[in-house]
Length: 138
Ligand code: THU
Image (cartoon, rainbow, N blue to C red; front, side):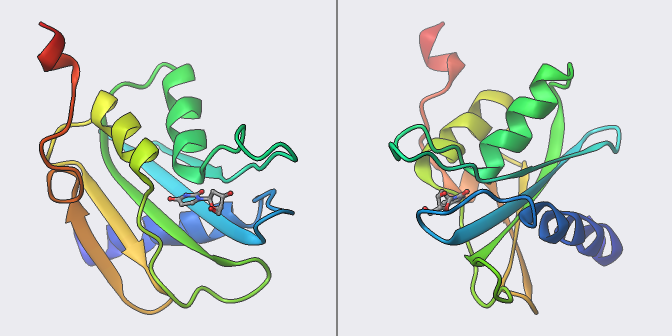
């Protein structure tokens, strides 16, 4: 990915974060998921009063895309931080979201994190090595 593409995806994650529903944690997260053919699906975290039904921004983006018929993804940008405050630190994806990424993405899938100034680029293989995927069930 070139710098312009990375900035574009992070920008969409920042916009998506505005739709976060996070009255319990007050931690707002946005994600923007890029398909192989250039469509972007976004998501924000959606919380619940009983806590456990809470869904992370990344999974909202993935499930929205999969429900729209998408199966091939190249990158996701993730941003998070205190609601109504500027982003000031990196928000890496939780373990459950890494598992969901593993369901649909190869090890070279790009994960972009931004702290409001710097963008860091990782692969899924770096952030979730030795994962349990569908190949183990064959
Ligand atoms: N959260 C995400 O949306 N994505 C992550 O990768 C980390 C955590 C959300 C879940 C919850 O609504 C809030 O952030 C605090 O954990």
